[in-house]
Length: 306
Image (cartoon, rainbow, N blue to C red; front, side, top):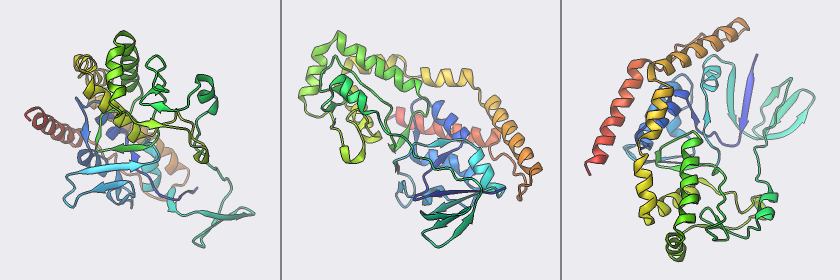
């Protein structure tokens, strides 16, 4: 009948259409445009995405950096549950527990029947031991171009967003790894520049060396691509592949229809089970999404003309 989500700090969540919007982009979606794309969904809730601790913007909101330890949770049910009065997000901490009661640091008491504690995850130290990793240099164990090791980076740290799915990143990692097997002298030049980020194990944070964060990954990607013309050429050859695959597999109207159908299905079931709030309309129409696509096209055209 009621769910409370207790968190020390509220991180940004990503609606499904916003995730689709990023993945269909020809290059990337700017931070300000991404934030505006989430607004139709956030308007159904009392939460303002621009007030989130992870959002850093100038006064005119033309430049945005999003930095948070958690990856974007992608989904619509989070917003629907809030809009229908089933979910309340509390920025607080648990002080103690008693019989069927959670006592919060703020003094609030919650009567509950089920408690779920979400621990997140930690990297496996066995990976460091297996590959003999003392220090990561970019994506290479101990700076050895033959020992490529890449785990998906933790957190978010970006001003532009080019993807929320795994496969486009994997493609670039495979290209990086294979390229330097063929052209090791190119790696030597990058390594000797001293510009690749490095990361050693952090015992106090339970973080092995191979576990890198988003800022580290972004720096590595930009540096390797910028200093290696061969890799840049390979990337240019597949520049629009991500966009084409996304739109072929998930055309805009079909995707919006599917999101709306699942939204309505959850809403009807929750209403039948006693959800207190009314069923809201799905906030993304064809026209709304088309307006964001038009804005993306303008931004892309401006970028190409520089």
